[in-house]
Length: 610
Image (cartoon, rainbow, N blue to C red; front, top):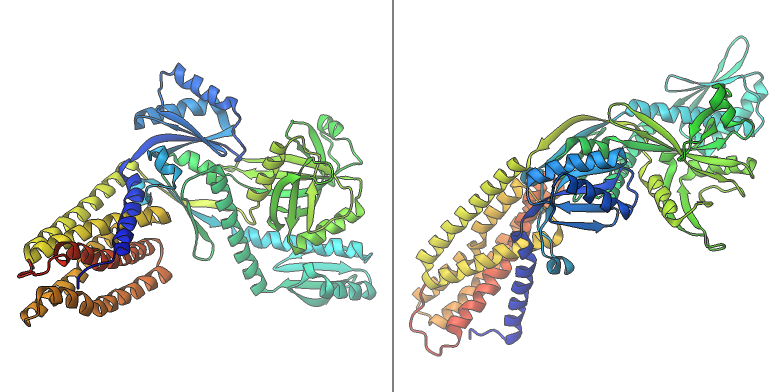
């Protein structure tokens, strides 16, 4: 009557074994560490490790070990004091080309990491780290879009050979002055059919000398552009942080024009600002082929329609002031090899408006050169502009094209990285910053652990005292439930915060709720005169529907909390939901298996210890 088939026992053992293995990484703690990455996310050269280690030896600083993973190098230290001293030493040795960030590295053994074992991700309130609130400059975003309309309209009229006196910004739109009614009619027709000029409300405006067009951008169009700029900035920030290698960052929108950036484990606010604050944009510009850059640099006489830049090697180069394509019109970039000659190349994809502008330019400039300018806005208002690529236009192209002539695959990968991560649609500034120290985080972890432990012990004592052997079985299931919950949080990579710990404490109480219902039902069956074996079976069978109903309604509430809640509420909902699922398994199937092992093999059971 109360026997499980062998496969059920094997299934329970398998689930518990897997849960135990993946809960283990949380027992090994963390090491104070330094994470070294390139300021632009490039690959770390092999000889850099020797330079770092030489600098540490000079200062008599020992490190546990070194790990190289992708585009970063991680050094583990024995204490936070060694970590801080080593940070100053390495920064001095490497200069501004590299970012040296204080971090906490998981001390999980290699064999566990090889099978995907990792500890729970802790939020800022538990692990410490930095929090930034960034404001997107929407006025500049609007201004940039209006400038683009002006440039597009001016270029389109030149292409259609429409004579005009001037095209300039005015208010929330633009004002174009033309000499004749025929020219104005052609310009109006151009606005109606040109895709890049959609969204303009046109009005004719005459003066004593000229025939004018006043074009205003619809407010809804500007709002959509602002939201697009905000979303693109979030994607760009996420790319920059991910490429640099900060573990488990949180980057999300707050309100209409703000972005929250959280970097758990990073303790150095200055270095975090270098990662977040040093945002960048890109520009494609034509090379001034008619003038000599060296002469302009020596004499200081730059042609009025050009600007003087420097390339990666420090050589001067003249570029046209007129912008071809901006970085916010770039959709994607990837490195690879040219199928025809096997040379490294970078494949670039533009949006619809950018594709048209690029096609118009390249159609008229085959054989001329085009440059990519990387513009980086660093904290404190410092701005750097550098030409990172110059290529000859071989044929007209638009939405997709390849940049070739690169020296190596490494250079191609670096250029693709800059193109992907450097396209901010609007400037941003940090309006709020907070640092949660590791000591405060450790206090929160200790308090959270105490709350779980105290609640856990009280529940264990009550169940053992009130339900005796069956209570001890429920206590065993409670242990299993707790490490299964920790294993699930670790495997899913969920971020644990203080509200999440509150969810775990609540789960500890709710985990035995199902057993209380079952045990009380068994008692009721015994009072009705049923045999112990029949009472056990009836207790589990008849209480199941009540337990399922109660847990399903709680799951619905947790789902609503997760759907509509913010970060802390989501953390509570996640731990509560997972705790309900694991408690259903341990409190029903797990305890039934143990009870079956104790009583199921006995033919005659005179009394149950319940």
